[in-house]
Length: 243
Ligand SMILES: O=c1ccn([C@@H]2O[C@H](COP(=O)(O)O)[C@@H](O)[C@H]2O)c(=O)[nH]1
Picture (spheres, rainbow, N blue to C red):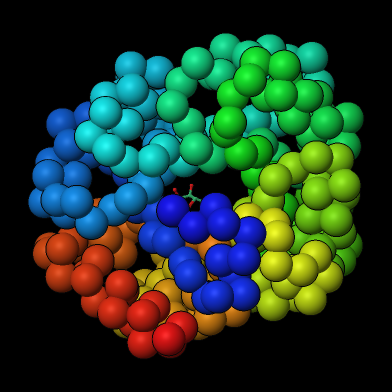
């Protein structure tokens, strides 16, 4: 994993496979097919709400790093206690919502520090499924890029280790915040794959070149007839654009 802060400047970029499937057997089947390719996988709400911490432990025991994408968003006290409850788990990256505000983000980082956990806390800025129209519907009047930059600045100042944003914002993030923050980027679509509900997308090669540290990729891999082929094509595309 490239948690090395200089990863972005060296254009290293890890793929995180989003295990967005209904059952643990399906998740295991995908991982069996991909063999030792993925170094990190996402467990999100779909699997975590069904199987809980035991699945995190089971998948980590296969040697995969865990990106636990729970997007916590609540009052500071509640988020801090949730992090205390998660702290014993082998979690590499955990998401909280930037819109929870600085007090919530600070409470999350302090809770993590108190427990001695080494998990990195990432603030989700503007979901990659949102465009200007969706933002305006919830009262956010700036563009996705401006909104993501504003939230990232606040979140990093409040103690987040990195952020989740779309690849369209990565260059701006690097200009503003330098090489250090972890930039985890969903909304990745190899050319020819449908966007689905994603609004702000980029290809894996472009996203890696822009300075992302991690690309979160779900449907293009897990719904593919041949996930191994797609995974390998994505890896080659990233290598070709970042060498
Ligand atoms: O802004 C965000 C934050 C998280 N996600 C998550 O990433 C994956 C993307 O899946 P695809 O199938 O490749 O679209 C998914 O698990 C989301 O929950 C995001 O898309 N956007």
